[in-house]
Amino acid sequence: MYTSPHLVDVRERVLVNGEPMSPTAFAEWTALLEPHIERTEASFFEALTAIGFADLASRDVDIAVIEVGLGGRLDSTNVITPLVSVVTKIALEHTEYLGDELASIAVEKAGIAKPGVPFVTGEQDPEVRQVLIEEAQRLGAHPIIRVSLPDPPAGVTLGLRGAHQWANAWVALGALNALPPPFGPFGPWIPDGFASAYIPGRFDVRGHWIFDVAHNPDGMNVLVAGLRDFAPPRPLHALVGIRNDKNWRAMLDTLAPAVDRLLLTVAPSVPGHQRWQASDFAKAGVAAAGFGFEPNFDRALADIQYGARTVLVTGSFHTVGDAMARLPGFAPLG
Image (cartoon, rainbow, N blue to C red; front, side):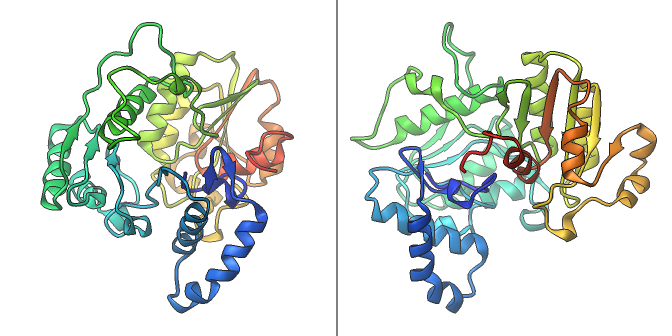
């Protein structure tokens, strides 16, 4: 599996049978590919994609799940010809690169379609879905599979929490059934393995902690819905760090009514130009709304626990990863 971004250790991005790339392999592939990375002036993500693909190929994997980094059409992962292409749904994100309309984002996402390769989508908005389908057809994808989202079957549970994960499960099943032999098709029922599916940081409950990497308004809406269904013990305190290039005010407006205390902070791993400043909140009227702001992450992480029965950490991969790295035994690696 090749995914991004990571929470604590870059090697989380490349997994084979659940095991991350070893430090030795990462160092050796980086050294081997360094001349080509420098010659092509590859970006950080492009370099990691090359390193990850090299490692997966060297381990002779039977099948790999490759997650696009940004968009699709121009993403560095799009150099492969997959067994099946999948677009789950479209949300407003990375608008500075992909456009500020769902239709324009859909065109970029559908750019992963390939001639003669099945294209699966779970997008339910008719207009956006039609854009996806038309672009996939233009690129020669076949067949086009529109996944419906029926009610969950009785007695079946998923390892990933949240009602929205059923939409992802139906899309994943659609992808399994679009695979050629010997990998597919699977059948109409939910695989047993879906009950143990786990991804760190996705409504990830660890004792009285909840970690969720929601980093746009759509993700925050899903998180709040998950909190309503899960009903964690109260008081529920939220530690929130969001990059300043995101639509953070809309995210805070969604989250604030769902928690008993909300403390804003700055994750140390966030690049300097993307960090919140006190002036950002003053301009947006956030201080008047009663949110606290503690820019020192370690102090904020300690402070948010006082008086809480449940602590939520959210707002970005940076925030969740930096918190996990500081809490003993919580980091995915190390």
